[in-house]
Image (cartoon, rainbow, N blue to C red; front, side, top):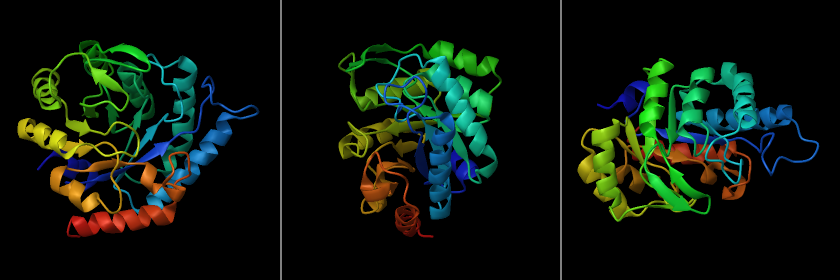
Length: 269
């Protein structure tokens, strides 16, 4: 039994993604907007996710595009404010992520009391946003200094928009990451939000993962969740839970409920 059962109440949890609207400092932050409006939209999405019955929720700055390698103080402060307005209404296990910045993610979790997080914590990558070089040794020491002993880390071993700067396979990356970095779980995603990972890539990671859970990071849908559960120990789900299955839409409680009915059936519940 992995930590997933203790944290989420099931070995194959569905973690719904709560994508915050653009925040102060983000290029897409709209004229005349306010953090209060971001919080109001987040509350509506939170209600829809919980009414639909997800097993957990991850709050991210999904629309802070293009993503910063070092998340700005204004973004992190705004995320903390919004999460603070939601905290008393969250009734399931939850986490937070400052996308692309492992250190900022750890600091955000310390400030908000998140129970878990997900990030591309490790490796050297190249893509549209330039060269990305992680210093996970520093990140882990920061986690230790902040006494986040119970915070669970879900490590991406793939990237939606970058390539790894060597010729190792994803399975080889996962194997060395497990040895060097002690991940609580591994996350395998596709090449973009809403697109699922390659089955062969997941299979390769599973061969080396041992007791470390492997979670689907992108592209899990109502019609594919049963298949995903044959390969993975759970899934992060975002786009397909939104109105019209569109990335920019609001979370739709009916779509969440339909998805979770399929997930529970696949789990034999």
